[in-house]
Length: 291
Image (cartoon, rainbow, N blue to C red; front, side, top):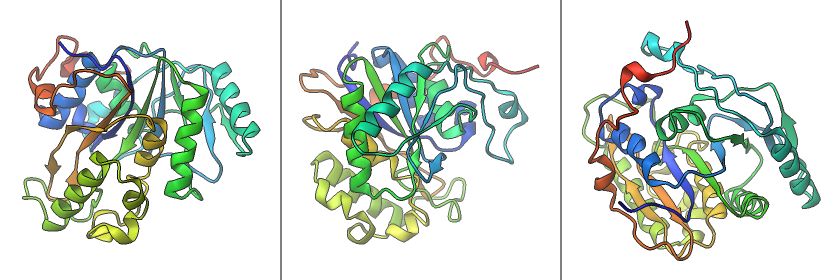
């Protein structure tokens, strides 16, 4: 079986939190992906659901699980993902960024939002990889976020996986379960795929005005922005790869992309990631629930 032994970063469209309970293509993909990535020593995670004024780094010893959503199955509100932090590495990262002239804060109280713990639980259900959350600074442009990703890579050049968690499209107002994809979503999804796989960074940086139907697909832009941090972290990737593509409810592209490091040999096509729908460690009854 091929493994991403030199994988540096992934952008994952996390969908709704109940993706953990579903038997869907996106759920099968996420739960399969963890077995194909060589387990890193740490994971940096940038979630669309943690926006701050200044760059902020999570430095808890153990992160609480935030249930920052409503209207889902009761079981989801009892899920706990006890991810360990690495406070000393978080503070070292803060100093590195400050030395580069980037004001940076430390946060010791905030837990992991669902944009972080949902993909983490899918990939590593045992919560056995330490996590360092990094916020999305609200004032950063896409170009600034690419630079932030580059700085993160320089601080953690080896045995580190960066997960950017968001959505390639994210129009919840237009979401209708079972609806065929909107033409606007298909157009934006195809445009982004074409430019990302070609590493056409200039076009991607100008997505607000250059991409088709941007405002329909991103009434607010935070769900796409983690992609730019991932692009910076995976700057030396010869060619990003499409790991999964799917459009849910007409308006949510669940496409996900990977950034192999130079020298990566074999990468399975995205359909192979759905071939084992329920790995042995994964079933609804295995979710870690509180009493």
